[in-house]
Amino acid sequence: MSYPFALRIISDCWIVFCVIWLIASFWTKQSIYHERGKNLLRYILPLAIGAYLIFNGPRLSGSLGLRIIPHADIFAWTSVILCVAGLAFCIWARFTLGRNWSGVITFKGDHELITRGPYAIVRHPIYTGLLIMLVGTVILYGRIAGIVALPLVLWGFWIKLRFEEQLMLKNFPDQYGAYQKKVKRIIPFIL
Image (spheres, helix red, strand yellow):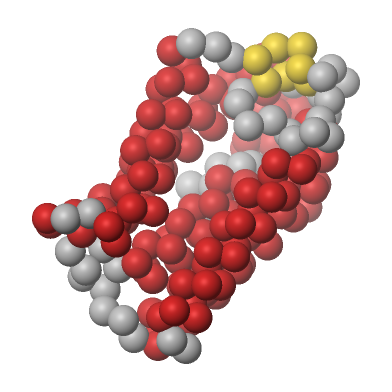
């Protein structure tokens, strides 16, 4: 598989992700609580910096723009497989979550605790899918910037999921506590 072809597939995956998320954002329940201020910045900032580094890595100069993963078919195939698989997992999770979804930490009217589908595998499958997509993208771009960015993105997701879990424990103390004991956060059986 050539690098340009792999790049096109990965770009298409990100476009599909953005379009689905944009369209689905109009199909959510009304929020009765949503976070504001410094909590939002705590995770948005590392996520934004990480995304900037990953997606601009090929255009950065200096050591951040240095390619350390060569153009090779094995890396192109690996990146495409990861990106497509991550996208599929994100979409599955998004549609399983349904109208309870939000891009920021919220609690919806008639909020449901979803523990089926991908939520039976990990508690935060959208983050899992996004991380898989990002790893695929970083492999294809092959730049130091992307490798530096992945821990930032993971940190941003980790901060956000901790706030989400506090909110869920507050609103579903017994059910969410039991769910936490059975299902890992973002990596099945590990983390």
